Image (cartoon, rainbow, N blue to C red; front, side, top):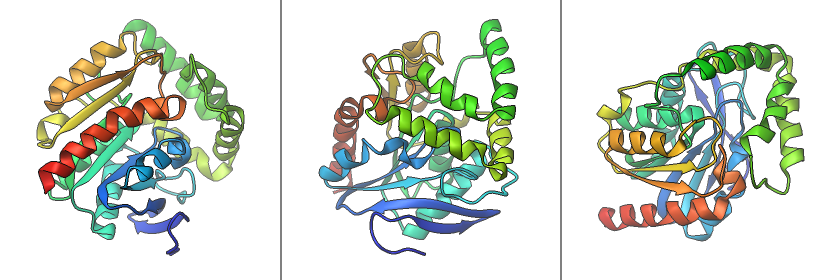
Amino acid sequence: MNSTPGTTRYLDVAGGRIAYDDAPGAGAPVVLLPGMLDKRAAYRYLVPLLTAAGHRVVTMDLRGLGESSTGFTDHTPAAIAEDLVVLLDHLDLRGAVLAGNSYTGATVVRAAALAPGRTAGVVLIDAFVENLPLNAVQKAMFGLVGPLVARFPGLWSALQKFYFPTERPADFDAYRAGLAAMLREPARKAAVRGYLAGDSAPVGWCEAVDVPALVLMGSKDPDFPNPELIADRQAAALRGRKVMIGNAGHYPMASHPQAVADALLPFLNELNEVAR
């Protein structure tokens, strides 16, 4: 296992190994999970803002993606939550804030319930947990896109333009190309199918969470007909609060990192004060 801060580290979990980074800091530790078919580098613009504020920041690749190993048979949010709990134990993190984007919003909610002694708060970033039932148009869209992406993984790269409807990061094209290259690897195909088949929007999981919660939602997220309505629903389920990230799409941590940091840092500071 690598031990130099800022380099990739690996941890054995059930079914394989996961890759992660661990940037040191004295403030409340934050663990960041990317969304479906993405890499931990999704947080490449947010991490420096959090570490500059003094926080320890851990980013984790999901099963079968990024630098994590392939060969896993379960890619559900619940399975990833078990990996996250193993990582929390391995790093002996206490008072950690768990943040998940999109598919892994459900993961951090589940992990908070599984490891209450290590979790100080949860953050949902354009997540699906506690979502409304799909309408007819959404069902048709997901029913069409899912099989196409499973067969032609490079399509996911093309869809990134849809998820960044306004501002895009400076390395947008290079990052999309990297995603496409990763997803085209033959060993990743099972993971792609697994994520597309997973239930990313479980209802009722939030009831088991008893820590402060923050819901961040891009106001232009194309995955939701009414992003603010979903944010309100999630905040109510978690008894937390919401912050809308103006003009952001599905990945505000990449397109609007400063706005995300401005919303997240006060939340982290409040938890620091409570812990003292």
